[in-house]
Structure formats: structure tokens, C-alpha cells
Image (cartoon, rainbow, N blue to C red; front, side, top):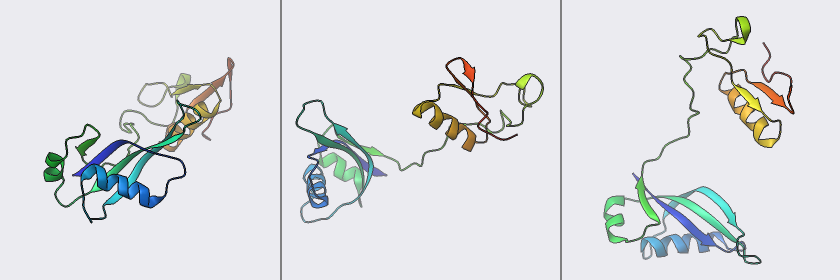
Length: 148
């Protein structure tokens, strides 16, 4: 189990030591240097000209449950370390298309509408998962992402 700290805000010119100090302050660690991993970093630009980096950080601790009881903050939660897995069931679909564009299991291949950055990224992830997506843009089919 690890501790996840959400909404940790720092100025754009902060140092790594300032990030470590902020984690120590939130977790109330005195003299201990926490072992942490940055899970997410985004920019908060809602109140211009003030910009902030907003972090989500996973902290490895010896006894995370006891540490969580000592801290009374909504920003800190107890979670398990999990790697991202693409949500795709290979048993349900096959990448080889049969008659009428259907796959062996009788389902249609995925269709990606739009060839902007998000559409192309979606098609790339589907192709990496073994699917052969059909890409459409402005009502016209683009070329297939996968070679058959």
C-alpha cells in the first residue's frame, strides 16, 4: 500500500527540494526524506498571471496506515500501486476481419472519427492493442491504421 497525495500546488520555478519539503509538511515527516513518484503533473492557469504546477504524488512509507491516521487531510489517500492496462479483451475480439468487415467473433472493428491529435492517438492505442481501427475524417474514410 502507498499514500497518494493529490492537488499538491507549487510555483513553476520550484525546485525538487521544495517538492520534497511540501510532501514532508503534508505527511508531517520530520527529518525523514520520503521516497516518492510523480504520477501526474498539470498546470493550473485559472488565475492568470499566477501559474501553478499541480502534482499527484505516490509516496512509499514503512507504515502507511499509521501515517494516514496521523494525518487529517482530504488530499492524502491510501491506494495500491497499479500499472495501467489497456481495457481490451483479446478473447472477445480478433484483429483479422472477415466478410462485411466483421472480425472472427462477429463484432465490427472499432471506428475512430476524426483525425486530429486525439483521434490519431486513439487509433494508435487501438492498433497497439492488436485491433485494426477504421479512421474517418470529415465524412471520408482515411486509410487503415493496420496493414492487413
